[in-house]
Amino acid sequence: MSRTRVRRIVVLSAILAAGCAALVSATPGLSFVTTPYVRATSPVRINLKTRPHELNDVLVQQVVGQPDGYSGWHSHPGYGIVVVKSGAAALYDGDSPACNPRYVGGGEVFVEEPGHVHLVKSVGSVPYEAYATFVLPFGAAPRTDVPRPENCPCQLDNSCAQ
Image (cartoon, rainbow, N blue to C red; front, side, top):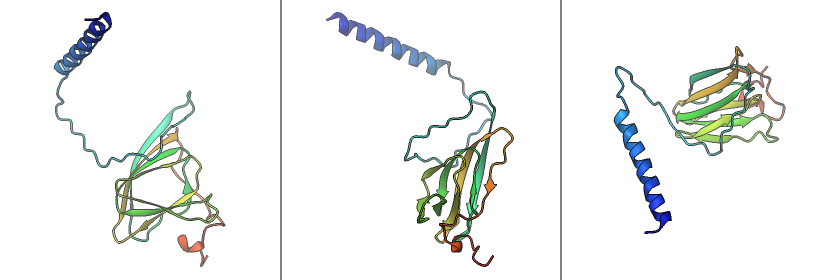
């Protein structure tokens, strides 16, 4: 048997032994329950950059939109990762020249960038339900309401009559 092959066998044996030792030393939980609500795979790599010497708040919130309901135009001061549990929504981007929506539904995830102006509208016959996790600057409000972008139709947020 070659020296290279012997080294591989020794290394693999050591890794296997370490893994078995970790399993043996693991302790079961007691009176502690974790309930996963929803999980989805992001279609893009998520890379959060915050200021390295400042604290952040983390906010997790449930979002429910009744059919034809909408969030109003707004932005967030930090990153948001939103996992859609059920229903469907149209995401309107305030920077989009034609203000065309992107649709998301149950099992999908989307990311909201800091300062990005957008509106979320529940579409379909069942409520839109999602869980959003925000990484915010310490003490910051999680949302900033903004006026409707001029490139988006007033029918989206019923601001035509105003």
